[in-house]
Length: 375
Image 1: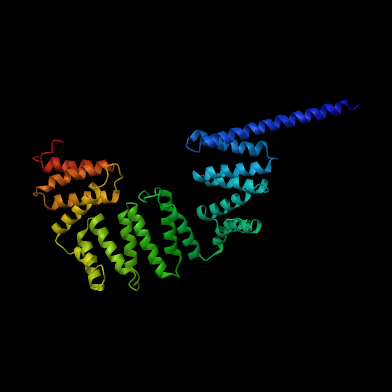
Image 2: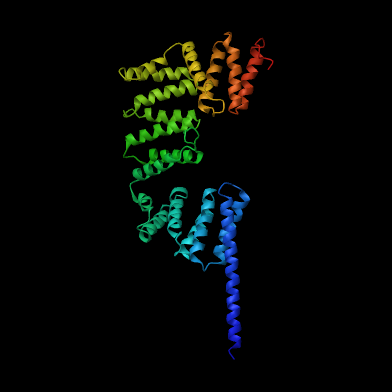
């Protein structure tokens, strides 16, 4: 009479073993994909990996630990490609259905960060940050969660410090991380527009924003940020540095020597004993002298570098502008066609092909007797 029960028990064992084997196979496939992606960004493999993460959580939901881990990793993939709605959906499922998983603290914190920093849903961010602090009071990221509840200026400065740490993608700090730069610009702007109790801090953020905008090759935006500092006549903080910085941008990046001279004259009038007053006086020199000095300095900087090194785009753009300004002002000078030819070469080297064409057309149109005109 007990025979059927034995059969059922045996069948149950077979089903369990079969299910366990399927689960292990899926885990092995996931591990293989993760390893393959350590040194690769194969999109097909990334998509397959995310599908496998979600499949595991669906088919083997009884395994709370690994289901929670895999949903966190799947959310991470979506977070990196800025599919934030999908990331939130996965994280909320993970924290609700697999709360016992060791991944739940990280899932909770990432959820809070997305609501706070991306979706701008303060109430939801507060809910998850508080949940993190209540449920995981000894977690190593406790301080990060506590930042949310601090004053706005403190919170923004902490986030700026995070982005400044990853602002460059190389150790020499020459290549900007575009995502970090964009986030920093947003944070600087938020500080300027929302922190009314720190006027000096606002000036500092406008100045830092101008520096970053210039490094991102947006000289016009940098100019506007600096002009905002000077617009407030009651402000005395950083005015000297701002005038000199603005004069440099006007002269060397925007090719507006007249406006640069005005800023330099204001600098000299306001700060006659300033250590950099001679730098300001440079902008008052004759145009030819300024062009010669700047061209020489930029050529030394660019042409002295190893040809394998990355050319600084801002310096290259400045030199192109100076070459053109010289040729326009002194078209009969023997250097004029040579400078235009060099300007085209540099423009080509930074992939600004429309500029290369326009300056080479000037050589062809205005300097046909120049030896390199046929080229």
